[in-house]
Length: 344
Image 1: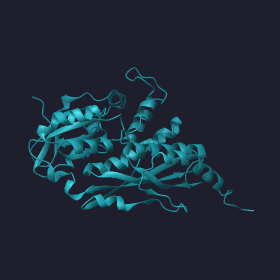
Image 2: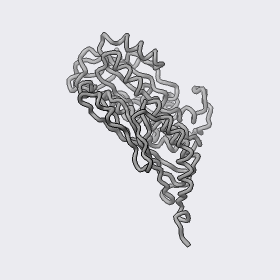
Image 3: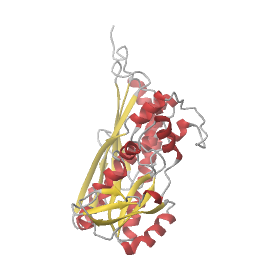
Image 4: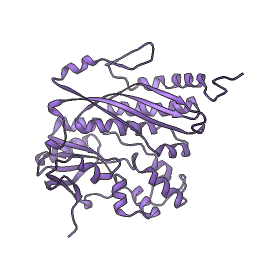
């Protein structure tokens, strides 16, 4: 007799995973979350938005990309969910939006309850770090389409910003200063190139390299830093005009998105030294600087464009929040591009 379980779907394992993740999800709860006994939908009390005169809802959807393949290979699943939150909710804060809630979606070849609970636990921890609630999600078992140890995850988040306080290119002025907020490492972009380097250079994730203080796999799986609360705090304290989340496309590509057509961001490459992991990748992969620039964050996870007179206070606020930050460049007349200052 044929059954759903015989086809590769284990309903009981899915229910066990839900039980294991329940306490972890609860740690991300906000007071606006409303319980839904049916569990079919996540509910959020929209009356919380009444404090805004003209609330604009912001939404973002993203995934973690092929970094999940390294997590599966290395056997570490408790931080990849933090990466997901960083990719989704830090996009919201670029316009000044406060992240409110998030949902996730996990597709896997086989539901291993403990593994699913680790993944969702990471998402819940990321939401807590961003000040948002994880209000729901879905785990889908896809036997035959994915191997039993394979999974992928994606998520969507919603935030809110007062219309008059929205940040972006229209606020940027000539003479503004670009601040760099340090990344925690590679974050979650460029992992197709990372995996290519590992394969071509025959590098093991267990490798102990002289340039690094820990095994290569630990370095590459360092979770994405979440800047949401830091960026919101900074915008409350000083005159922030725009943010840029440094993801795929690198510093120049993403910072250009936060500039008006008549201004450039002129950056000083000598203002920082990228973390050692980037020189490891460039050296073992023989990657040209132009490709490194286009692919990786090179140690800058978020950029803030602030008024010149706010720089000292901005750096003080970030230091108090344990965010390593420095002056990366300045805003000048131009054509809407971020570019590095030419060496003399």
